[in-house]
Image 1: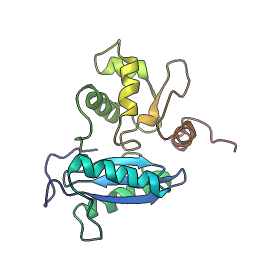
Image 2 (image 1 turned 90 degrees about the vertical axis):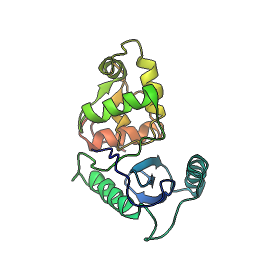
Image 3 (image 1 turned 30 degrees about the horizontal axis):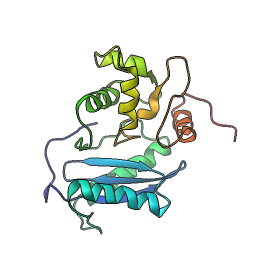
Image 4 (image 1 turned 45 degrees about the vertical axis):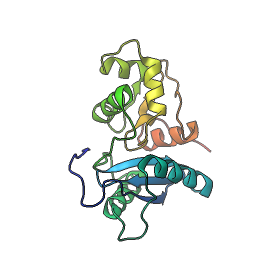
Amino acid sequence: MTDSQRPLPGDPTAWAWAAVDTPVCSIGMAATPTGLLNVVFHTGGERTAEQARARLTRHLGAAPADGPAAPCHDLLTEATAQVQAYFAGRLRTFSLPLDWSLTTGFNRRVQRELLEHVPYGTVVAYQDLANLVGEPGAARAVGVAMGANPLPLVVPCHRVVESGGGLGGFGPGLEVKRKLLALEGVLPEPLF
């Protein structure tokens, strides 16, 4: 995984949106010339997708560009292919440039640590992740950082669990978290 500082050609405020259907739900993705900016679960209903696009439009100061000639189209095409390969069991590590501009400070530190040190098929406890970033008293703050993760799935907050063995939380829902962990072989496949 890289988070390239080398912008792609084009307007730095330009961005594009794409959606991909997966076995767990529809996932929306936004990209800027810097990299993948946002991943949003449950975008099959137009309301969720519209809310996500409106939030990003306010943040970036521009509406998304549409069509195959749009800036970032190639990046979104690659992101879609990698998400599909992940759900097909052919991809374990995403290799996309990332735009970290939707996260800062402690949250960004925790999310980067997660990305770099918790590979496919493993889990980490909130407390252990707090220890990894050198903040042993910050297990709850790690939970907040996971909830604020703008790049779930790619920055795998579904791999963060409770120390006692519980699943903990997950913005897209615990059923989605169970399915992702089952896909990665951490949990058995749900029976129903």
